[in-house]
Length: 377
Figure 1: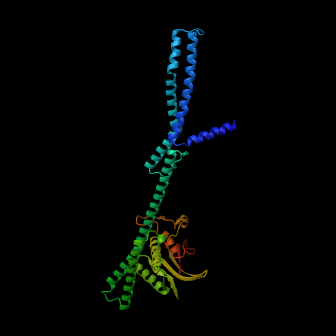
Figure 2 (figure 1 turned 45 degrees about the vertical axis):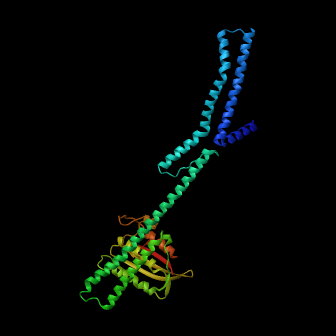
Figure 3 (figure 1 turned 90 degrees about the vertical axis):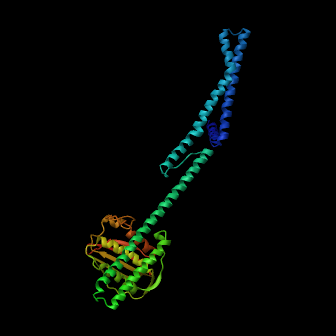
């Protein structure tokens, strides 16, 4: 019996995987053959009864003889009609019903813009191939949607980065322009100070120009180009000092730069480092109460030289949830309409593309947050 069952399963699977036309022909041959066998048996039985009635060996009425004659004449048509109906019903139930249902459900999912389903129909016939093609199309659409959302997400990050990086240079330019408008007519600005202020303003304009060129070509923060140049660390220190001075002009929060002696030179992207600083200052100003302290130092580690940038504020610091999620995109303890929770995430990405790292913590000696950014130079 096991051998018979095994052969039966093989035949059934073979028929199941036949193309629809061949499968329909197989069903037709089987049911037509069954109808023919039944017709032959019925005709023989009817003819035998009629012959026995005519020969007198079987006693029956004319009405009964007419029934046997009718059955012998019309049995073939009856069996053929019934077999065709059974064939169509069985063929639809076994070969068409399930794939049609699978395709209908898949189309409904497409209509609802849900691409997380799977079109499964285990057959090698045309409908099985159609289900596999539709499922392949679904996978391609799903990948396309994921890629599209990734592009949109990267564009949102770039737009947020652009908004962050515009804010500080514009604030610096505004602060120095107000400074000159106020004190220059009174003769309280000497020539050296004038040259220094104009140099700082020119540097901020160059940063805006450079960043606008970068935004035209970069599609994601991870592709941000690092343009390293050999520069004096002291020059970077003085530029940061000038930025902090301009942001402190007329503001409620005082920004200070810890005195440091940065001798020597390094290869780094000055604009990228200043963009990180801009984001950190923008974030710190939102939470600081009275003061922000910036510290800059260079250190040799594992055979490489790194530049470390620390920004400390006297706010309430990070919450426990904030310490674990602050570097995630779109996270913020306080959500505001013009802030999208991307500043620290942008800083982390820019530090990494410059070969460094980024971390956040709370100060141990007093209230407030401390953010550390490092860059390989």
